[in-house]
Picture 1 (tube, rainbow, N blue to C red):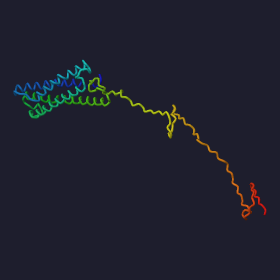
Picture 2 (picture 1 turned 180 degrees about the vertical axis):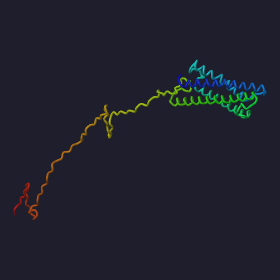
Picture 3 (picture 1 turned 135 degrees about the vertical axis):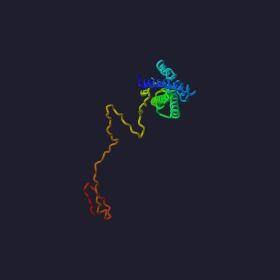
Picture 4 (picture 1 turned 120 degrees about the horizontal axis):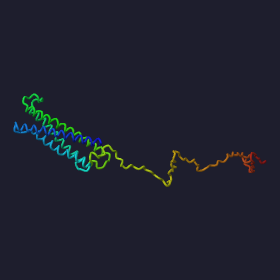
Length: 256
């Protein structure tokens, strides 16, 4: 048996046993007060009612879980938490009422100080009702809080219908593996727009294919040609009209 269903079974069984004890103590106290005082304590009547309700409903919850696990409506977590919360409120009210009545009726906290055996017996029965009522309240409240927290955790993990399942079948400690994973975003280009750059895809193995740079145009540089300086002829400087012939590196002058 799993841990949580075992805790549930032990909790309900202990509460059931304590309820039987409270029922016996409250019934004995009521019988004594009716016999000698011609009346009964209100907390004793509340204790009998609370114990009776617990003794009727808790065995049904235990039996249905064994006979029809997960199928009975009493095994659903939402119903179980709601009903057990009502029970622990009733047990808290019983314990508080018994404590208030004990403080007003029995002046001494030690029941052995009374000379009358009847008063001593009533004092001990009142103390027993008070103690076991507090125990039932604490046990039921702790169990209800545990199941509530585990159910909220299971719901936060995206488990569907956890509130309508039973404690024995609830995935309290199971991660949800049905969540859809987000697919990776991939892009594929079929062409290169003008003014954009294209990149070669990465090859497997972690290597990259890098193309060598190809120059777009080549320029041919002409060799440097030195310029020739032609001196001015004398005749031209004196107003003559004779032609001046030049050769490369040679100057010819025309006579008068």
